[in-house]
Length: 243
Image (cartoon, rainbow, N blue to C red):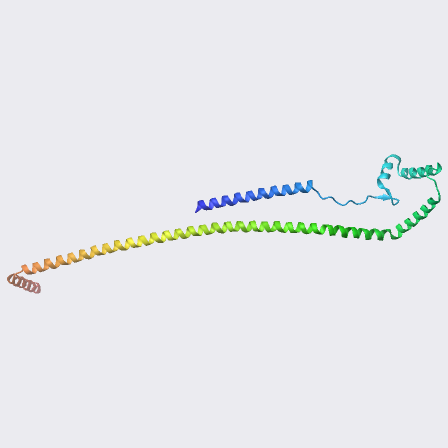
């Protein structure tokens, strides 16, 4: 029994170690896959100034010319283009100015609401796209949990089979001991019978021997001897009475 328990404990420890190693390797592989095949993240627009000039433009000039450098460069460049008539101010230019004013007014008045609505639509679209992925991930997680549950049940079945085997061994042991007890009882009963038989035979032989001796002694006594013995007994009684 102790050897079976030791073997079973060793097997369970080995199984547990194997499961831990497999689980650790699986987690390492999953972490490596997450780092190697990371999902792309939707980029956010960078910070701008004056509504359309990137912040990096001002940072580039700030390290060389200070705070006013980019503004001075922009004004000087515009003045140069206009003074040299590189940029010609024709009638379309004034139409563009009016259009720019309209765009600025629309940006100031309707820009935040439009941006909020567009952000909401983008988030709704992104959530809709991610919904299928989340459902797939959840289904796979449920499948993993179900697989772990089935593995746990399989381990329970192994323990149950081992318990049944031990139960069968105990039943065989009980049957073996019962048959040993039956054989012991039967042998003892037969030996007791032989002992009682020999005792009865010895008692019968002794009784027969005593009866035979008594009968032979009785037959050997003659009437004269019986009378003499009787007279001697009476004389003895009389002498005892005088004392």
